[in-house]
Image (cartoon, rainbow, N blue to C red; front, top):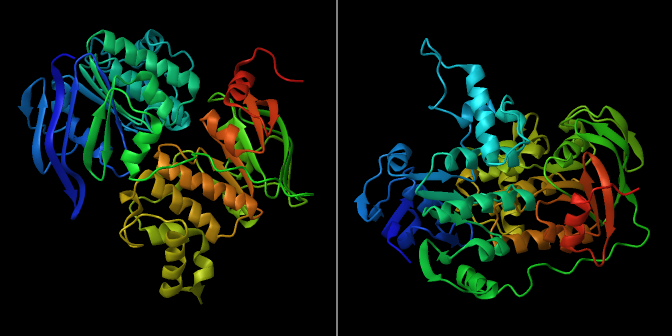
Length: 499
């Protein structure tokens, strides 16, 4: 161990009377990769925001390089060599990849104006320097995938040669290949003597990259370890033991009815995809990012237009021109990015939960508040949403509880076909277990579920079948029991597609 790079001493922070941190302490050293772990709402992200200059603590001391500092904002942290990559992305969606990547350090021409062509050229070279060849620097950020946006955030931070790099859930939207790329960048920074602090809910990642682990619970640090097994870490994080992360997969019902059938579906980045989905089935969709999963889900939900093929829902041929039409047919989507595509963060838990069923809760065009409250409260109670009340803004909830509200919305709408896109992204281990139980419970009750995950282990344990997509087509179909994460990854990267 060498000199401390960053320290928090007895740091406290409250929001409206709710304590996010309570006398929390933390130390990370130069040349170290240090993991912060804990449940959603344990205080990890708040601590990173304080250390990165985005939030000021109410109490306690922050030291960088051994010196006490009072950070006035992110730029003050940057001036001290500290950079942050957040789970909630900070890119400007209406600007290009190049403009975001080189923001405030663009190349200027002889007139002093920014040279657009030079900015694109320099951004392309910067991406290539870090081994990123699949992202077009001319593309608008709003048009690229969540994983690609996260990659841009990482490159932007790493290219500033940080002495301290904070990574808040950087792998939550990345798949295995991209995680390995990120870990290569982290190892290079460690070799150069930088300090890397990161959070993750994936224990295999923590075990493989972290030199030390600090566990947070209830806004306070409860221990720092060089070695600790997952079971003990979960106990310290939650105060209870989770004996089995993955619940047993319920059997498929005999002679289950076909709920949804896709025949030769084609569209942007999707080529001739066919499959059937049965009532009571969890059908997994996996493979490397960028190979058509997101576009397929959007087509099934009427958010993207299919250019070919046929979709049958409960025996009736359908062609959805909007999500409204898909919802009317009993299809629901939990999207890739719940914060920008699923929830209205400034609105309450009640408003978000009942959004789709407002017509049912009105009489002569006037909303019935008592019925709306009862409906929203039923979601909170049945899904064990941790909230101060149904009037609390949904943006104030942890990621896992936001996801529960989004799932509850579709249960209130009584949708029988659920398209779940990476529903455990950025969710802590205990809440993941609750979501797994909910997904399998819904399947046992007859819901038909299409389940995409960037985590191959999830697909292997939670799905009756897994479709592995590559280059917009189904490269393999795997059947339970006996599916392994290795089978899924192998099918995603093999040279030749399955016949």
